[in-house]
Image (tube, rainbow, N blue to C red; front, side, top):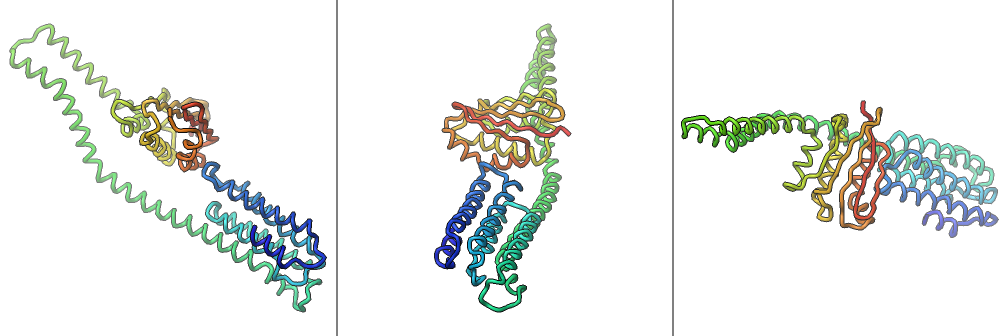
Length: 351
């Protein structure tokens, strides 16, 4: 905005159209506001459509700026359209893949080249048209290519990090399995020591079996079977609530068809992250946390609801990064803050 307005005011050519100059600045302003809007974590991800709107507004600004001074533009170096479009591409680098930025750069460069070719007859300096084209296209090409390289390199490094992390995670899992097995065994032994050992000790000390003993044995056996069945049927989602919520304050999960198992590993990680954030949020009541999964073949409809004492805006800002990830991994995320309840609705594929 500053570049466009500054050059329009300081280097404005005599005879140029003031109205079109203002319109050109407005287009650049729309593009800049588009980046601010689209890059907000509350509206993530930065979609391709939003990128097209931003780049299209920038290119329209460059075209309108050229139209404002057409026939009166005496030098190429004071035109701001190429540089402004390049800066817009650079600002989009953290949000769009390199191929989109490369295509956008090529389109913008072609438009700028056509503009320069049309303006060449009016330049005061005698030089071949390709030289003017090179001068005009260089800012958008340099900034656009730089943004594409940055984005591509960043994605490649993240993928390498994820690959190494996956290998280390698998190695760590292999090392932890014996310890987990011992822990599970110890839990079982603890349950037996609490429920069964006292019964048999009393039985041995008395030296006889009564009808009450038979009833106690049946009750203990039933309790052990129920505990084993409950632990074997417990889903990873229910286990998360037991792990992260304070004792006795775990929320509820309604998933009669085992639909939680249909989530991918990335989706499970995202759900665990936001549930962990809710459980550690002092304004949220973990005991009110409820999760419902509904079969709507071929989709699974999901709902997460929790009671919070924070106001609407504070809740949205606090969980904004988690919402951004959920919007990428799940379909049609809807966030509602009604009264004291935060409600999330989303869906995902079953297959």
